[in-house]
Amino acid sequence: MVLGSGQLRVPLVYIDDVVDAVMAAIERGLVAGEVIQLVDDEQLTQSEVLGMAADQVPVTRVPRGAVFALGRLSEYPLGLLGRQSPVSAYRLHSALADARFESERAEPLLGWRPRVGVREGIQRVGTG
Image 1 (tube, rainbow, N blue to C red):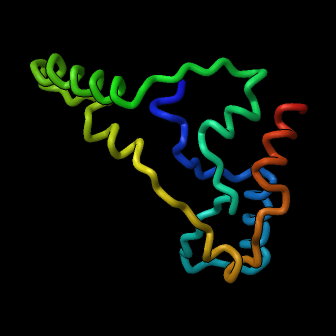
Image 2: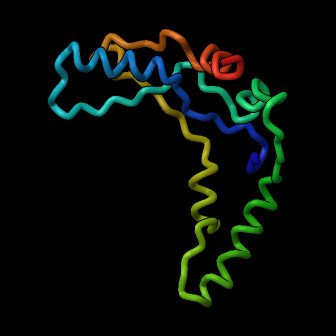
């Protein structure tokens, strides 16, 4: 299910590339609590990722306006019960925000760049 247009970028990294980064951290002896985000340089949209798996995954799209209307509606009955909605308008705005992710610390600290890449990884999983 895609909430909205499907144009949000998703921060993906293929598992083999994660293993490479973990091994590089071990080999370099990183122990000072460094925080390193691992994200493929090519950040695909939800629609692009689903398009690669379209023959395997049925896709249902819910328009952004409908998503927020349903989220807002869920707040009223749950509010009467003294509960917060897990799909409140605030949470939806946060979840559907167009954020950018980067691995700028991975190369200088680990010498890491994705070896396989997310496109190749998706193809491997699809044919695996």
